[in-house]
Length: 88
Image 1 (tube, one colour):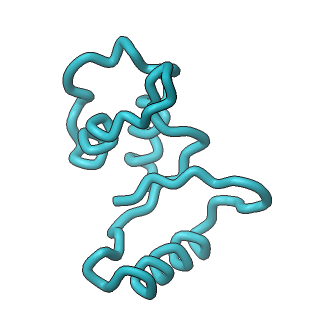
Image 2: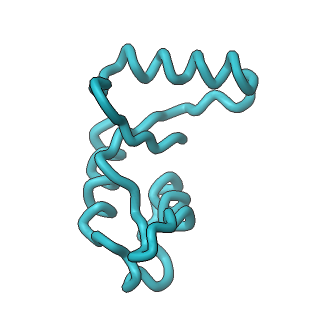
Image 3: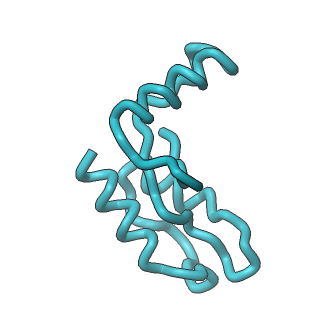
């Protein structure tokens, strides 16, 4: 699973998902091709700007966020990521 934050003129679409998957296959290999790509305006970050990868792993596995989330810059992003996971 890949979590992607778009910049500039790019817009989330099924065609962009396919293009990103093809790019991963070309650059890294077929084994690295993500099964799912989730677009998000932002990722769960601490106040110091570090991405909280353990929370992304929990969301990808369909689990509730484990551990301390009090250092999150914006806790609402977890719900947004879970909702996008359910809608895809």
